[in-house]
Image (cartoon, rainbow, N blue to C red; front, side, top):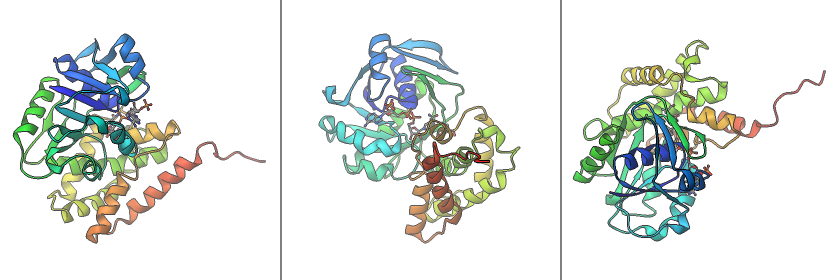
Length: 310
Ligand SMILES: NC(=O)C1=CN([C@@H]2O[C@H](COP(=O)(O)OP(=O)(O)OC[C@H]3O[C@@H](n4cnc5c(N)ncnc54)[C@H](OP(=O)(O)O)[C@@H]3O)[C@@H](O)[C@H]2O)C=CC1
Ligand SMILES: CC(C)(CO)C(=O)C(=O)O
């Protein structure tokens, strides 16, 4: 398949690198890794491939040309519009466009660029860290999910999932896939924000006594999901939260990494997405609403930390 990955960061390099390794024609687009990958290739060290260097094509958006079967969007969600605007010249009405980004609202954004039948959505629980430009580490294999933005499971989604499987990145498709996607959003809304606010990694959530708050936040998310027709339960969600945290206990959640690096977070798409859906469906999300404000305060507090004047 001819695949263009827009957003060559931690996740873009993971998906692009693994698909390139099994022979797909990959072009990585955008970001500070591009010149390094062009010159020296992409260095990957994943739990399922071991250390390896791959040589996908790499370019900036304006250099892109030709037709692609699949475009995978893997910028941060607040970068999506600028990224999609920059690749408008290669969009056509035959290609598939897949967002594997965190949060809600990715479908609506892509609908501004292509028809709904062309859109796939997904989530991924595979972790990836960009340790230097053109160099990533993925420390454990987990699972993702892929769906058609609307309608029943298509042959196209089966085929794309099968290729990702061969590349070592497994996804649930069909029954249960939407539930996985919602559970991931609720997981990120609860665990990532608390880790980011407290400055702790996932393994510290239990010692600091954060689970009660996580479960209350998750319950709000479950109520919004249920109102959307997604049949998940509070108990099931708690188990998922616990299991994801257990498997990823050494991985620093992306929101903690963003806050630590003084960058903007995806909170408006994760908790903000849940709160917007809640408002639309008449489901209150008071804890998530406060957490959104606290994360914004945390973003704005960088460089203004307390200094004793005594
Ligand atoms: N990392 C992880 O473990 C996981 C991440 N995710 C999700 O995957 C998505 C991507 O995350 P992640 O890879 O970590 O983020 P990164 O910040 O590592 O990657 C985003 C990349 O997009 C590039 N970029 C920014 N603006 C544009 C643009 N206009 N056009 C093209 N490229 C652009 C960035 O450039 P530059 O290099 O200059 O910053 C960067 O290379 C997010 O939604 C995240 O929540 C999901 C699961 C796990
Ligand atoms: C990999 C995972 C699930 C860990 O929190 C994630 O989504 C993130 O870091 O944003």
